[in-house]
Image (cartoon, rainbow, N blue to C red; front, side, top):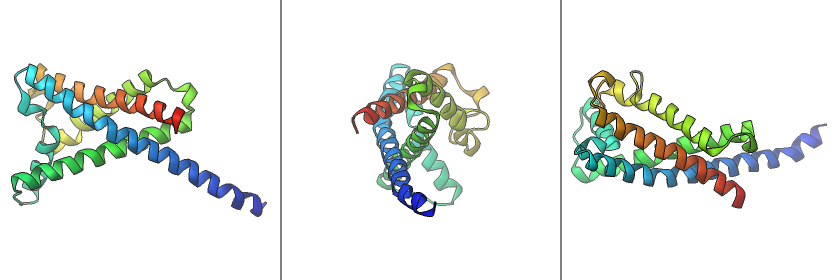
Length: 171
């Protein structure tokens, strides 16, 4: 019995490693159109500055820490935060989808659910961006701000879902 579990261990570890790697890759990839679309929506609505969600979050964190950042360091940390955040969501998505069974989880549905979860985790009343003061309270936001937030979350969720399923079929 012990010999069988030892023989299975590398297989389980390699499957989890491959799943997480695919998820991180999908998350990193999804981070690009998320930013681009949020910027486009923000610009089209005349609130492009409100589309700089990650940089505002980093600025707020630095302020809370009593620190001041140079402009290049501010944007560097915002980029690192953005892509690590994306990697984390991608890995979580991949692990959940693999656990549920990829054939049972269509990307449109799972991407939409992921977008709703991300919106709640970041922008709702209890969301991290709201709680830290990086984003205004939902009742104080204009409809345009909500549209920027939803476009970012939805683009990100759907891109992760479709990219992950594409990667899973080929890699």
